[in-house]
Image (tube, rainbow, N blue to C red; front, top):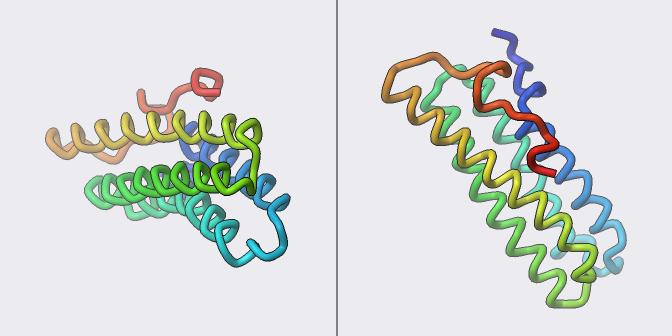
Length: 142
């Protein structure tokens, strides 16, 4: 198994797209928010694909599931911060809505990945690879 096969996972690819969108959104925030909410949004977004990659690289299904769960928490954190950015007038609802939709798709994919990993733990199967049933086309979630 290649250590970098996480790059082939649809959930990792979509979470990278989500992160890019968050950076584009926060680039338009006022300068005084650079180290405030903008930084928090960026860190939450970066945490999602980073934890997918780290968990996958651990080569342990149990560790992988734990890091996927952390990614799920980061999705919820990101969604909260996006709503706050909209509520505070730092970003329009129109700018935030598609990012929230993408985050919800990532959250659904992570949930299914987490379920699959727990099923593998119960059956003592190896860590899933990029060709497993948990890797689905991106267009299903866009």
